Length: 245
Image 1: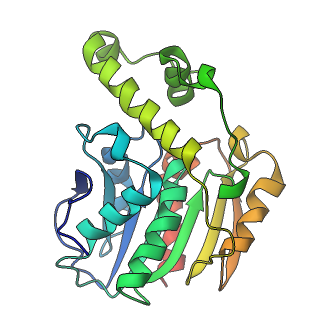
Image 2 (image 1 turned 90 degrees about the vertical axis):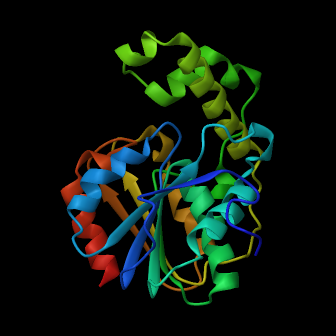
């Protein structure tokens, strides 16, 4: 593999190496800040929780799903001492996590002990969108949902505009992604959904994940909507602890 960060600007939070026996690698969805993982990590003592993302300055044209996965792996592997990794992807992060699991397996077979895909449909069932999906107002609506624009963003229009451009690039990358059908993750696959999440309202969209698993495939529904993974960090940590065994 090339030097860390060769393809994209990658951030690891915290920056420390994966210096525990087991580690959780978290890939949040679009618009979810890295600090969201802090409460989750507090409920997993002894387990390194590392959130992986792109630097805001990353050129949008380079940030396709597979390039993200390659670059994330380049940043994760140097200095690694953890014996097994549990990759947890939320929303778009679930799709990137699928590719990341394959990249890590190529470099270090057996490293990935499991992949959790949360709040996302099976990749081949991802909806495709037209231009109206990518206007500034539409992108803000996708990220914020029914929530108002936070005061700090409302007071910084230039910063908000830059964020919207970053989020638009994320949605475009997701729209452009085409999975390699028949290629299965060499680890347990866990499909988590929120009971009130409109993204995964059709059960066929989530059960279709089964074609991406080569070992054990489990499904689990949690209370909550799209961000259920972060709404109750203690609950999420308990479930992850079971998978870490």
